[in-house]
Amino acid sequence: MTPDEFRIHAHELVDWMADYMSATEYKVVPPTKPGDVRRLLPGRAPESGESFQTIFEDFRKLIVPNMTHWNHPGWFAYFPANNSPPSILAEMLTATLGAQCMSWQTSPAATELEEVVMAWLADACGLPTTFRGVIQDTASTATLVALITARELHSAGQIGLSGKTEKALRIYASDQAHSSIDKAVKIAGFGLANLVRVPTDSDFAMDPIALRSAILADLAAGHTPCAVCATVGTTSSTAIDPIRKIGEICQEFEVWFHVDAAYAGTATILPELRWVIDGVELADSYVFNPHKWMLTNFDCTAYFVKDPSSLLAAFELTPEYLRTTYDAEVPNFRDWGIQLGRRFRALKLWFVLRSYGVEGIQAMLREHLQMASTLREKVRLSRDFELVTVGVFGLVCLRANPEWAQESELNALNQELMAAVNAEGHSYMTHTRLRDVYTIRVSIGQWRTREEHVDVLWESLNRSLQNLSAGRST
Ligand SMILES: Cc1ncc(COP(=O)(O)O)c(C=O)c1O
Image (cartoon, rainbow, N blue to C red; front, side, top):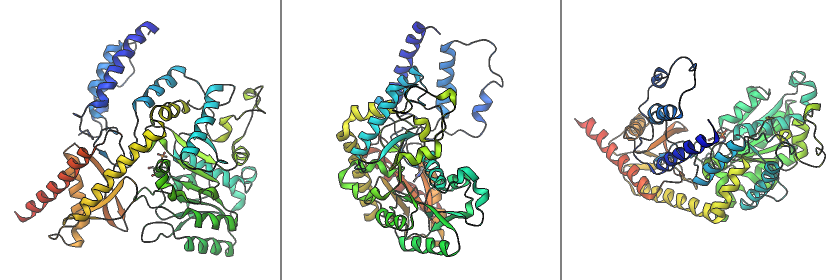
């Protein structure tokens, strides 16, 4: 494809993209069954090149109708993965530049822009000015980086963990922490048996007294407490672990303190919600995902550390072929994490922060929070539904609990109800279990979601519940 042909096709694509962005005719989740798409595709790559028109036509015919539309305004599942027009445009430029941002020399503007936008982000979110930021691909990677960094403080890199079986390095996280912590514990070689699950209180937040007891018990047993992972905004219910109290315990026992605010971290751009990270200055590392709720295309994870030299101690390696003239003067972000090759992700953050400004992002978040509290109020006033947790962010955890159903039937009833609403195609929700209560999660945070979309969902929940009730009595 020549640059001139590229220009023509790119214009066509942008027209399609703009239409897609305002389209509502798609079902949020397609009726696709496993194998449906594979069956439509040839088993071998074509021997000779095909025209762009043919490829694009197949994209429209085979791919789009079989996609789950995360940026549909009826997206209420998991957490949002919202994008935005400026972010998409920046992604186009990133792809066009095609740069590898592994060291300053391989991408001077990318490295320095990353330093600047991460400092902007820290400032906008009320993080300590001493934190230094680097962009990682996902929160899962950032947590792995944190645990490897903590592990290296016990010089595991030189001797490996195999020499440490008697004095096990122990990791602590609440019983509500995300599975990425389990995964990081496995990958980093601690062994899942050394992940201590700290109990949570009635709000699903880590009990700091139980944490302290667990650390003391481990010390008495000859283990070495290595890191605590606290969560601000747990995945199931957006519970908030008490950061300051946990941080003080980490200081007392000289344990690495990692805070996972993957979803909720974006909310701290609102001064009125900054209390959720009270005590964050005690953290050694902190992660949140602009790719969830901050209008920035996946992937873009903001990872902050108190002391970058600890990251370098864990990850810095400079083979001769990577040496450059300026290594002593500049950050080489390949040494701040796992990947060598890195995408130019700072560009989309820069576009987003400049296009919306802090105020624009705050306005969107406040709108989502308002929709969530309106829905909570409707649930509170309803005779058929109840809130399972209170929640302060955009996630509403609810379940149907009508008079006509026994407690023992509620889990199955809510499962059926959610499936019935999702099948209508206008909205998509997912579930969790909170102390074995089947809980419907309505996660409000997609950038195109408006009050009317939440109304459609609420009306459908009520109507579908009545249908289930009618179905039982016939
Ligand atoms: C609290 C929490 N931590 C970590 C993750 C993992 O995020 P990522 O997909 O960026 O690895 C999630 C995902 O929803 C999450 O909710």
